[in-house]
Amino acid sequence: MKPKRTLVIGDVHGCLAELKTLLKTAGFRPYKDRLVMCGDLLDRGPDSIGVLRYVRSIGAECVLGNHEEKHLRYRRHVLRARQDASYRFYMTKPHPAVHDLLSDEDFAFIESLPLTIDVGRDTIVVHGGFSKDCPRWRPKLQSCRVRYVNPATGKFVGSSDGFTQAEGTVFWTEKYLGTKNVLYGHHSYLEPRKTVRPNGVWTLGLDTGCCFGGHLTGYWVESRKLVSTKAQRKWYSDISEPTGLVVPSRHVV
Image (cartoon, rainbow, N blue to C red; front, side):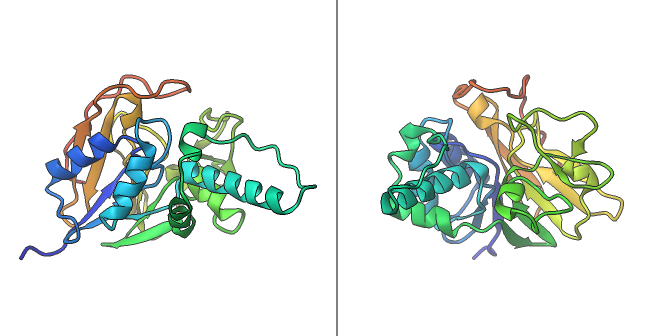
């Protein structure tokens, strides 16, 4: 019997057919190999509920993505409002067509998702990334959402739309101070983006924009090889997004 391997996959965003194709292409063995998802299973694509339940059914692990966090946070507001008629909240329901189909079991799964997962070989998985003040301050929001940081302090700098880079900021990977290699999602690239820090530690972004018509990308931890599958179509285009998406390179990292 072949030894157990670990496959880490970037943001799926409801693209169930592409996920199944990628697993087949990669030669993934359910319950024999380890599968770890980078978060953002939900929203934008054609079958978010199918993705969530399929991932659960094959025993995959997953870190909390900002899209899961939004659904979870909205539900908490709703449940509190049901118990307290005077409670008011102003959060818009995230992706109603998805949210309204999530079951209690789905929410229990989302609630259980960790912020990071250790996958061996001195490597961890996170959805967004790390800043100098994370996870001390609002860790779920930071590790799920961080993109840009202040280059002098390394602290998270947000934006009104979550995408626009504020003047004078840098991407978090350029100031990462950790001792573990990092596999992450959240920010779509034309191809997997590797950044090597001065101490030799590296980060690798695996979100290659499947829901935007790009690719779904996976990374075999032990062999350090990438695998990808092309999106069936462009599923989502309602926000600022990367352009010119191309097939990810298959280089070993």
